[in-house]
Length: 438
Image (cartoon, rainbow, N blue to C red; front, side):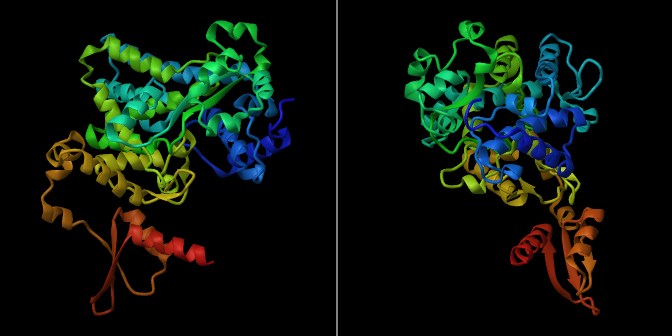
């Protein structure tokens, strides 16, 4: 048994806990395919049932075996979700575009119910997949660091021989969180990183697909990539970025050890010359998604699970909230990612970052914003508020705002004198303060 792997009883307990407490915006089958990967990270970080014990060599394969699932079937099902996105791309490139994010059977990609209703421009989606697949690659990240004079940090997953790893006194924690860019060739010579041609020469139970960090840095926010792409381009490009991120997640546990999001990006670039996206555009999104140094706890970086996890109080997931913000639709303030960043704060941050980088006129004429800017200012101000009397509870006020779609509450006394105005953001902050003091 490889050291630092979570006990199977803890894995099963944590899986049951996730199933009981979380609901993802997808089918139950895909939900389970995502949860098995979430448990890997939770074991590494000592979260949930792992109770601050850090099992840093735990992999998805360990999770699957602990849950007594068929590893081959789990891998095939995850690969199928990737293959359907690839099929969508190839149909568009081949002149048979689909205007909805559906597979050939009419099922929504990733089994997300939203995709049944959304009409898309498939070629804009291709732009997003191209950007999303490349902006996370070590090469573009390094280029973005140099161009914008920032530190991002980067690395990638490799098939690792765990016997060689132990001989070198390494583990998953060291490989993922220390800098190894200058050691990669040495790792290959020592047999730690297994070359593609040698995979058949190593027993499958000795191979783990592990992340090796090339350079230290705070990384990128997947939320930032999605939302900034939506603000600069449009919603459909943002959807493509999201699909590329989903591939990057799912490919961590499939039959092949490949960077399938990268491969799909290169295919799009080669097969669809009308794309109209340059590497400079990729670097730009990599910069906008970059987490500022020292701001890691204040910047959301949602995994696929966190993108799709439904906030039962507000009735939406982060993915839906991001799309509403991009399209200028009402959205309910909610907490994002594992570090619980308030969505309204994040949207203000990423909007300001985009505005500080782009020429204001360029941003104001983007497809995503132009419709909202055509609304007369007096019409914007006439959004109907909810009017309440003093003494109404916070719970009742929030329920009134949610049911009406209003963004503000006006508090009036019996003589209709305005006592004050509260936004949803204000109410949420009051709830946080009260919770902290409880």
